[in-house]
Amino acid sequence: MIRRRLKLSLSVATVWRLLKGHGWSWQAPPAEHSSVMSTP
Image (tube, rainbow, N blue to C red; front, top):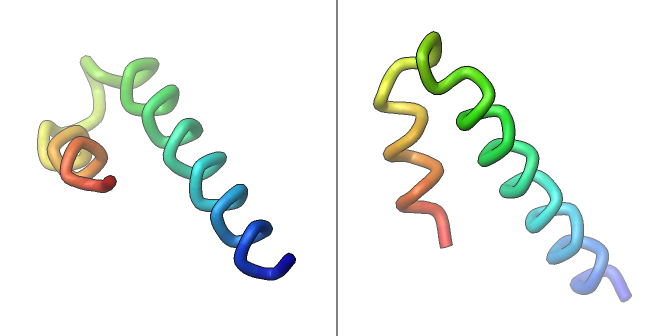
């Protein structure tokens, strides 16, 4: 149960970061985008 919760929160965080990265792609540095891409 805990592992499932961790996986869920991780996926949510990844999606949130992706959405945030796309929303601020022209303001956020490229380093943030590359870090998101490298994350599995």
